[in-house]
Length: 291
Image (cartoon, rainbow, N blue to C red; front, side, top):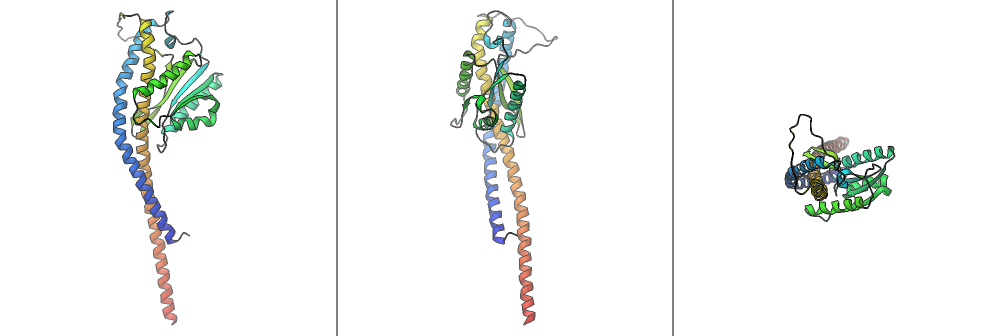
């Protein structure tokens, strides 16, 4: 059985850990609000851009001059999985849930005889994926030095992806990230960004015809690469908010668990101390009676 000194050390250690987790929870909470506002502000722009491009693409689809980013390469053999995760841990299942979704997609594609490649954005996803897919990881981008995410970071990733597509290194690119819903809910999401998936309109939806200047194909050649950067930027912002939400929730649970552990350890310490005092009193009384 542990001595009273060891118990005091253990209680003090647990209290120190509780202070750390509480501080991390407060830091995550303070950063979450700004990250959440940025993610929510990017959603309307990204959604509207997708809607506009889908509208233009529906008119240009099937035409001989349709951009390859819309029409595709005509093959479905090589898939690039663009997996965006966090740079740090202590955030519950945030990173592992994104990696799990990407891993399941990769395994399903491999089972179909497809070739899979990974482009990892974020240290945690890279560390997990290289255990199983080390040879399939073609690029890893670390954003630990970035203090505040900007569109330039998404543009840099988009340029690297487009350069590989132009070189014929893959046929389909799918983006993986976590969509922020709330502090306790972050939804792993897979979104195909190359070639663009044009959403079909409902049969009873009102149709509006537009005339474009310049022509649709020319518009799409400029809009499609920018849309890829916009969608990646949205994913980075959603991930940032999801990370702080998950970390806040995780550190809150850790703080509560530490408090419960301190309560139990203190209870055991008090009982042990009381038993030791009682034993000493009995020994003193027994000695006095013997005299």
